[in-house]
Image (cartoon, rainbow, N blue to C red; front, side):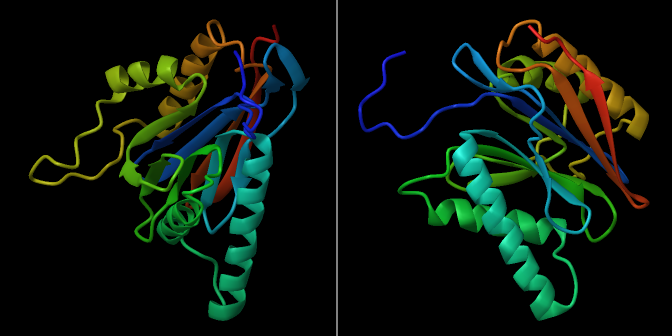
Length: 221
């Protein structure tokens, strides 16, 4: 692909997925970081734990992703000092939206999925575009493999539209174990077709007991 001389972005690939349940949230991403046909590292985490029971997964340009995560972490630390408590996941969702919109004329080339628990202990997933527009959903996928994964999630989960009345919670009907198994299946499928997704799968499960991580191997070619 040809590049203009003033093009400052590079897509380093990777795929992120989040699924929200009644009392949990699963956030997952692969660990491959690449440029074109070159793999830079096979062990790069795309998931950042930012607030109380809240994790952010990002794909896109690694320089912008690092800057964005560092900015959000600093703002969350400032919030802790001012309010003597950690920021909630919905509050972090709004902060992320504001941060992306602030940079809308020279955007962070980062595509984000934020997952965690809300104030009622329910799972929540927030999905974004590059300039801060976001919505709360039951599940989402971002990154180079999202076009392969989202049709499967739509078929399996059929999240209710927030425009339908009466309003229903944007959570999926799966149990925590079923959601983790589904995430493993969709990533195993995506790695067969997307060369920018692979190596290892990092899964972060957030529930009232805390946060736990799991790693499984994916295709390495």
